[in-house]
Image (cartoon, one colour):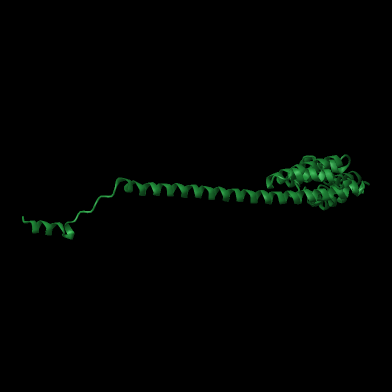
Length: 239
């Protein structure tokens, strides 16, 4: 090969060799990509934490508003009751030190406000127990079945007692038979009146429903009528 052929071969574009990238440049791209992925994951975690915190705070604020409504309703009823008992309205207003203490206890954000309102509602229900020192209000704090039995029971016994009085007075004649026929819807009427009276005498707390114990009330109204009616019928058949 001549010198000219060697030079011609050396300058052909297809035969030129490119220089290999340095090792440092080869490792720089994966390192930058790894850093980018780590930063993206961290940013996504921060975003998720912020969204969770915002959602939790919104739920806390809503719960605090609900508690505030319940406490205000309960306090308004108690204020009216105390005024009826002769308590001066000025003594029911909070004093400046009490307002300062309440403000300080609720300075920790929505969670602190919610905790303070729940504590206030607990105190308000405690006041209800104190006000229910005598009379029917104390009965309102009994368990539902014994409490409602005081309503369903007398209504359930009304018709059977009338049937017994008619039977003892008129004997086995047609008057007793007529009384038995007229008294057939007595348990249903007693149950309906008791259903309305339970809600009237024992109103539910704010946010709750009146527990009328319908099955228990139906049995309480039905059993006395069935027993008395069966006894009168058996007495008439045996006569």
